[in-house]
Length: 181
Image (cartoon, helix red, strand yellow):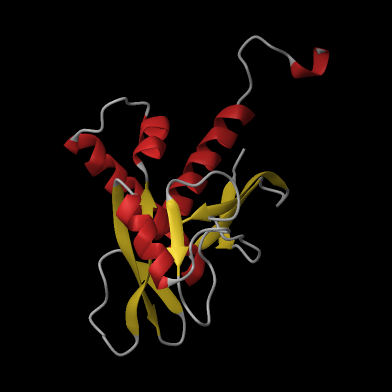
């Protein structure tokens, strides 16, 4: 049996910082936008105080020109971009999340990488890089689906995997006559 997949933009993706468990705390101070973590500090002074008590923190920058995009490294256009906040983890949060008692330089590097990925995921949501996947059989009937897959390349990889699984599952089992079951 032949299966195909359709990867389409997710029309109703939710802010990933507001659903499920998130790594770190994202505090945001901006006069027009509020997509930071609920309950997190939202003034420059409060964010600065939180970062002073964090074990690891990264600045978060936004470029705002006909749309928004964020990262932890900054943008070359100083006119339409600047720091809007920070993302951080305290020592206790790191110990719990990473299952360690001692925070080494290696663990801190893992934390920084995790926080960068959290900001990258939020950026995908901001820029509309969130996808839905439908796997269909030859008749066009949806046999499997996945919503809110972040990143086009990841969605296409997942779609290919889902098609391969559907094809394996559709293969008859040797020695089993479905009609007699």
